[in-house]
Image (cartoon, rainbow, N blue to C red; front, side, top):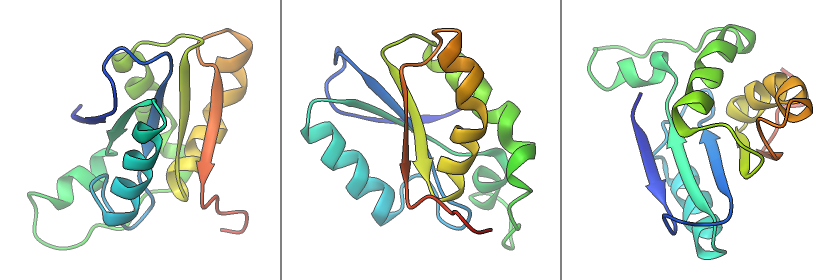
Length: 124
């Protein structure tokens, strides 16, 4: 799994952000959000789900899978970053939706410290 990092390396909190359904982790909106959060002193780690990463090397535009099928990938990103109470998970649109789907049990277990959703899709 590949991450894009912004912000101070030893920040008090790290925010793990997933992209939306149609734009990658380095899109203008994701970059603007990461820059803004980093400017406030957060460490930001952006990642891509496999379907989006495959768009970089394969011809054609693969549609996103159902959000709930991305839960294991989001959990893998959390494990790669290192779960802790100083980790805030979230994302833009679909990425925020997936983060919200895995957040409850992780928060209760002390494996994350919060949830941040940007442009959350209340209606699919």
